[in-house]
Image: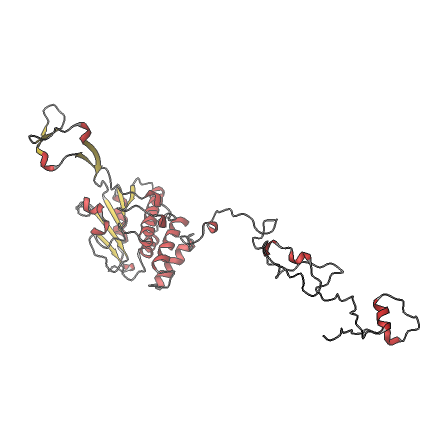
Length: 363
């Protein structure tokens, strides 16, 4: 295990600066953590390439195609399944046992390959020959998240000397990781590969931007199940640094309509300053001067937020307005005259002019 304080930063820097071609290799078994970590390191090296004036050829590869689950990670479109084009491969559409002998002829100045088939076997034609390229031309491999050489999948099976013929830097935050590279940066106490890559980028002062840090945040969120598993102070320090550099949270789970730059339609006020449409129950309509809270208001029920199928009880009893006086059999003749607007005798008793409380009959 390599502690963060013991990471050979100078050795890593020296190998990166001296390399002409760099391959970022991630496992054939994809997780959000290892894909996000690999892409973040790849994008950071691209920016370092531009800022330092170097001319590294940088590639990121995996034996597996990325699925829809990873399409929001930045840089995922740059991933390839091809390690390089160093070697020419000549394929013959025939079985091995059909070949009698293969020889070469250099007499004419050209390098001629002569394929002789066995007796009774049809001769090979031009349509039976195919050409392709294979072979890694990178002189430095940076493997992110590989617990062993076999984790590269078919890319390793097709190139057994993948890690033997060149320098390699292994970056892995998995407890199962083995040391199979020239430099092995293995930290089993880290939450995962994204946290470890964030530390490396930060300590090596490689350039970053919001997209790179968003990838790292997404990887840490995924491997820790939103910080509910295998988190340490270093985990939160890495998240803090990423967010200070422009990283955004919940990038993979956030709906598209909430993504930065999405122009959502305005469902709120006509001024476009408010997307919140308050409920009519929380914001009742204003009432006129002569309108009572006890009177049914057509404006109150005429709200589109209720929906077209809302049923209103039209038989609900209506309470009288405050300026109406309920009349019943017990009401005095004087009170009836007052309610009907009949002029009151100018010599009426003074107590009649005082405020009174009227109550309807008990049912």
